[in-house]
Image (cartoon, rainbow, N blue to C red):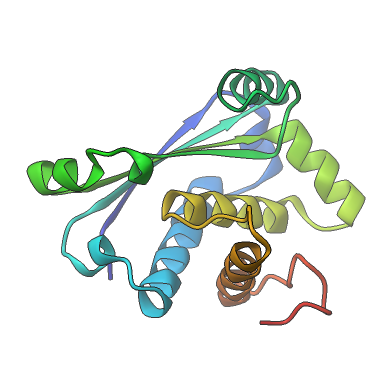
Length: 176
């Protein structure tokens, strides 16, 4: 099993009230995501003994809106943003030099997550697990710009969430 270091920063106090056992849940999602990806995708640094570090920021729409505007040119809040260090040209060298894998940062907006969960009639617990899984996959190099990439990433999300006893977030018609 890959050793993980998950640093959680809570910038919006409502998070811990909304999802009981949040820190333990996040650790469980991360462990399951990395285990599944390691077993089903060839990612070299996951096959080393190096610890994997991820920073998770639990925030609000205002903060995510500003980041989305400043870094993606989209002047609106979104549910989850990922800032992957795997895209950095020095990623491989830094991983060798420091003996650990710094994957990057994920930030999730509470209000957008709550609104989407209500619209989809799913629990905050399940939607959080989906958004965090989605962010983790981005940090590992997955994307959904092209249709083929999107299908590949969604199948991984579906299967990771299945390990957590969470229904397919894309509906029953899309089974991997």
